[in-house]
Length: 174
Image 1 (tube, rainbow, N blue to C red):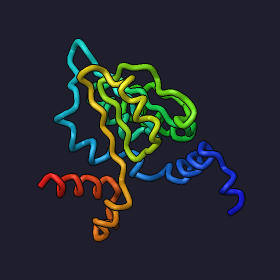
Image 2 (tube, rainbow, N blue to C red):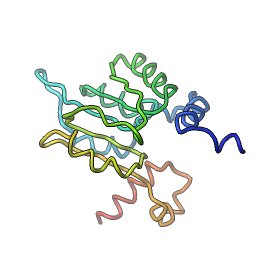
Image 3 (cartoon, rainbow, N blue to C red):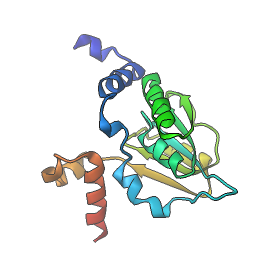
């Protein structure tokens, strides 16, 4: 256990992504994002909207967006996750721009982006950086499960955090 406490964020995430590499969950986009599809900028023959996937891990959301015509930049601290994202993009026949960066010490890539996506990643100082990278009229899509939300939906805990977040949002809208 002492060794684990001395791991850097990069090392901890690399371990996690190595262990999860065979999981189907790494290829399934967030149901929260999929539900928002009608609200996302549309690609056209003349223009591909730009998307930034913040702490996007192995690319499950980035590949889904790229398949829908987005020009996607995925940033993550883990080189293992970025390699998984590269492999997933090749398998899906799409391209991604992959950037290894520790978001707790480095800056977001330069915008503007029509869509900035942050799913299950919380680093509060990024909230002041988001307006600088979201294009005028662009979207910031942010989802973070909270302890209160998980407690409120304890019966649903056998489901993924995506399902819990989506159901909580739907319940709150009623």
